[in-house]
Figure (cartoon, rainbow, N blue to C red):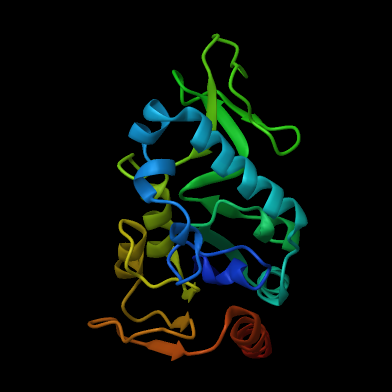
Length: 229
């Protein structure tokens, strides 16, 4: 069974009503990165950071998987599919995908602020000051903030090296280290890049650019790939 590795960014969830960070009306329009998504912000204003991620969880609770999420799950009928996502939502899982690697953490999980190995499922949408882990420290969002290492990047690179087919969806390929994953794929492997604003990627052979939204382009590509199998 051929292995498909799918790299996804914020664009795959935008059609489910989740704001992207960098669009003109995105999350950074209302919040500065430095104020809500850095370790320094957590130390400086924990209340604001907690409020920001609580709002994100409330928004996620109202969102549903879109046609792109559901279509990717269909690929599992005939391929070994691995999703590597920059997104912290759970829409891939709710859409039916069974192998999802979250590079930047998971919104519905929290972790100890002194021991990163202590990770918990958050019940409900609200994380409050005074919610502690078993070691007595404040729980924080299970999110990789700007300036923090990305622990799963090595596993993601290994998956890309093993890919028979690589699909990239809804990302500008500008945010590193995730943007560099495309370079780990075998040169001769077919590659597809779906994004309405997709730009050419130099020195990447066998790359087909599909300038469509995820909701339109992904189901079309999935149908093509299933027909080939």
